[in-house]
Length: 182
Length: 286
Image (tube, rainbow over all chains, first blue to last red; front, side):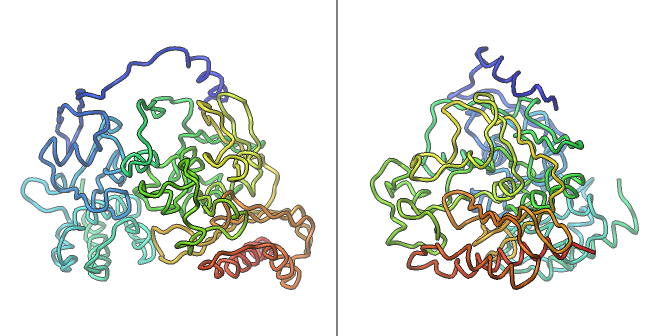
């Protein structure tokens, strides 16, 4: 970043940038490796774009305020609350939803571990839990219990299946470090 | 992100938005011997995970790491964090025409005020919601703007008495571009108390900073969060790093508190936050 940044911004403030909306504008998202082209009003959130303007219903709308983690997707490999960002800001950046975890009909090791450990009851928080876990294990392949809790602190499970979820994360960590995948 | 939240709640309905995310000059973190220059668009995750910031300015890295959740920290910017609007539920509900929305009543005064201010609360009882602001104030940061240039952070936040409709000294259309934290060699620490272990707003937070010389803390200051409409700074000057002296300073600092009906507990939390954060500075001696 340039120390001259402040000056540059004000110097260029006179140029009128292109205004978008309020009507629909084209939006190109890269979801699970596939390009998704939709027409949306600029105010549409990434969550709404995924669920209502295309067919990715894995991310869930629960609180719609970034407080529950149900809408978690990975953006540039990092968990984000898709309800609290505009779809237009996610253009050109890789998005992973829960639909993108399984490969060739085979569940992701994290999904397998959740299944084995019965790490859910109603399952509504599961897509978000899975994605936060995938991101956590990528950054920290052998997390401690405290690190798991911190990594998943943005995902609420109102059925309180937390203990099984933590078991599943530990199981997935062991399996994945034993046979490191792609 | 906060603006989107306010729009969803029908508190704000801007006719036009300007997307700042496309301005690369506002991004990034530079640390050198003079201090840290943090772009307004640096994310809380970048700040929390930055090894130089953690070493030189632990209060800021800790404050950023305590905010919200990974999902939020990966997106939320430091500029947006210090400019968040109040979390007061009367402010956040469109059906309450409170002072902050141009109305004539602070509904928290005689209402549900458990999470509200215990200082500077005679007009409006909001508390400033930013964790990082608390740390930045303890670290004597400077806010750089496209507009007036530089605003010392001590003058950046304004009380309801000064301007009921806004929380910062930014002029209309003025943009925060960078934060600069001077390297002074001061030790610093941040801690907070909250009801839940994860994703919760602080009940009371504290950032402390001081230079340690022998057993004396020089230029000691503590900034409390979630106790006043602005980050609440207490300058203690030179103070012995003993439990007795720190306890006395903490008692003195909260003496002027004016708690409301349901938040007297915050006075005790504030005392404890002051003591613990200062003790941490002293403890860091080998």
